[in-house]
Image (cartoon, rainbow, N blue to C red; front, side, top):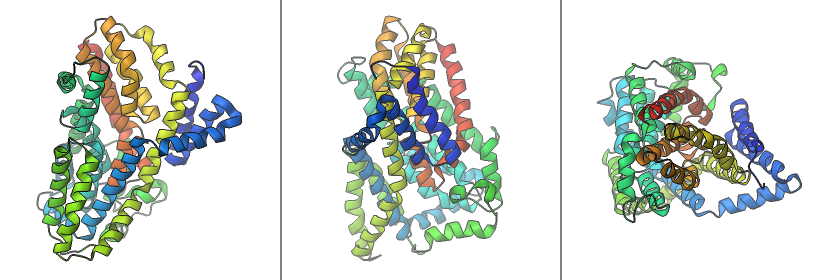
Length: 460
């Protein structure tokens, strides 16, 4: 399209409505993409979809994501099969005495794995779901805690993939001098209000100061009746029973070694974190190095033949395909939204409201909307920073505050959007239905976002 128009809003609305009605995020994203392509050029929509799909599949980021997600699935499958996850569950049971303490353990583990939101979302959920199931905590609540300590924690810690990426963008766009990207990023950390409020909010929910309400309350009540995983069934059609809860746990661990050793879980996880840091916060390199050591580590113990380990890894890779396909569909949809100039339309229509006093709040609001509808937290930041930061400098606005607003919007989009990579992986790691996770956590993310908006007006 030659110019940005209100038509660019139609595909995101279609996706959001269909996702809620159909509860099929991949289908919703594909239909939304087709609608967008029909608006651009109806006669070549199918050809354009094919071209965009091929372009996305050859994108370096998508290739990296497939390898990382599949690799995580392979590692998790090994941890389960060797009994390492079960051993950690037994260990955690010594400290988790009830629903609150099990969720607090989940929260603390999420804070500890601050290096990357993918690493966080997949590791914490898969590690803690058996513990929280024991105390009849819903998988939706588990996924909410995991998601709240994924992107928000990574945003707040300067030693993370988020800090490295955004610090680099600040340098590339002349906001920070060469080598000073992380330093400028750190100046904005106090103003990353959404990330702070999201972390505080989840703690308040866990300890009961903020009550469980709405869809989350419904999920929690069902879990208390014996159904921890609402993942595979409709909430209205569930026949609650303790037998269902037990079967959900038994199916996952029936092939696991019930005599597994704790070190068979702890060693790979520590290697994963250590290698990721060693390779300059490169999760893929950390994962490959971890698998290279974990396989012979298990082989020496004669836990299972190498051929069986390979089979488990392949099965684990397969288990990540729904998450991978959702993110691929989201990338295709983002490409279509870019062609419709959705970001430019939103920014142009909100620019008149960008005064020095309102700029941080308007930046947070507009970028949050874009990050939510496109599912692209990093992409939105990359697109918006060349537009927003020169405007902030021209208005003599507080630069760290504006950067904090941009990062807050990215964190909100990553957590709230039902097809963002972080949300998808938090649901996958927790073995929770994606739409159930998105809908149950949305009220809490919106509360944190509303307070953040007011906070930026007050700080400015």
